[in-house]
Image 1 (cartoon, helix red, strand yellow):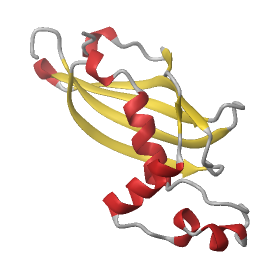
Image 2 (cartoon, rainbow, N blue to C red; image 1 turned 135 degrees about the vertical axis):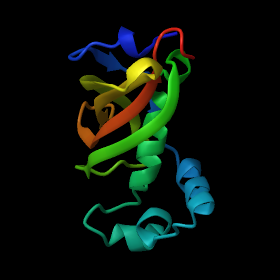
Image 3 (cartoon, rainbow, N blue to C red; image 1 turned 135 degrees about the horizontal axis):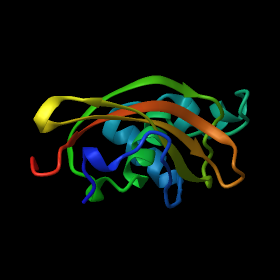
Image 4 (tube, one colour; image 1 turned 120 degrees about the vertical axis):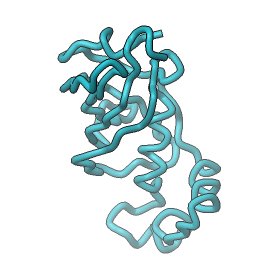
Length: 144
């Protein structure tokens, strides 16, 4: 288990990969209620600037979150997300992974502190798809 004290500014991580499927998009649409045709209507999406259906931005962020080794970290709570940008479409069949860097640590006393990560979601060609600053409240060693 990694605790607040174990993270260092500048430290980098690369996650495992995961392929985004048509089923992912349909299930996310059903779960979220977001049936925007760019995601679920092949004919509509074919006429869009992307030429095909693309994944929901929030699906990409959710999948990216699940790629991180969260069960190996002493997480107290998700603290927030800043500067989110979707810089390229995630298409059906893209295999995504996350490249993250610890950008800041903010001590919150004996309980632990907030670790900030700059996360870049990339596809199998190394193209940036989404970028965001994630903040996670981590327990201090001995406070879990």
